Length: 328
Image (cartoon, rainbow, N blue to C red):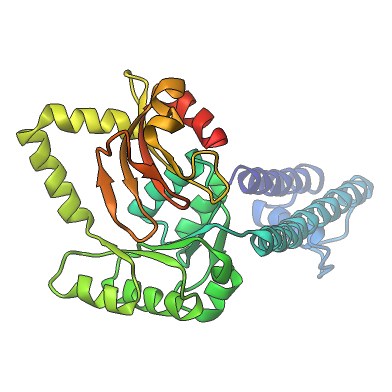
């Protein structure tokens, strides 16, 4: 806008300069001076008002040079904006597509609304690779500002899902505003990748969760239900809720609640919790163990065996958790 305003001011300044010059040098009326100025700076060459004297001719030459220079500058800037912007946008898309082509073991976030933005922020904070799909120009602009990987299109389109490498993704999160769209997204993603973990947002309307599960979603989340439960828990059990917040999000206690997957060749495989010395060496509490088949063991005793593929839910200092993750 500033550049446009400058060009407008230059144009009116040039017109004022030319009109004033003809009025003073040729004794033209204001209208005749304006007419001569316009046909001169635009190089139209239409009939002149009258015969010019020497001063008028010199002034006209100067005015033509200024007018042609201004016209060339304007055309150049317009061309630079159109061509340069188009090339820059095209280069940006090519660069983005190359990054997406190399990505794997990532998450696909469908929808960059209020919920999608929170999910992306947390994924980015935890260094999880992800790609966002959205077709709203305003959200695309926000994605560019954030610097996230994104793909513009309909998330329920098979070609779009293939282009964001759904076949080698770890999971897909469908959080667009429409329940119907989330059903179609889940159905399309499940058809392309049978092993994909799919989480879908639900409005909480009757029957929606069942439809999403039938479409292929592994987990269905209703933000309204969760929000209501959380508000109730803050009233009923405020201390417990505050403690959970501190352990999940980190806080002044310096504690975190994290999950660690035990690899097949891990040092703790086929050892009891006591023999693994997790509590002794890392000062961490194993709150729960999730078996490969999905069984959850809460507050496991010291003689509980750690198996390959188990997921340990541990509570303690974040730095210690990271040390255990490297050694487990």
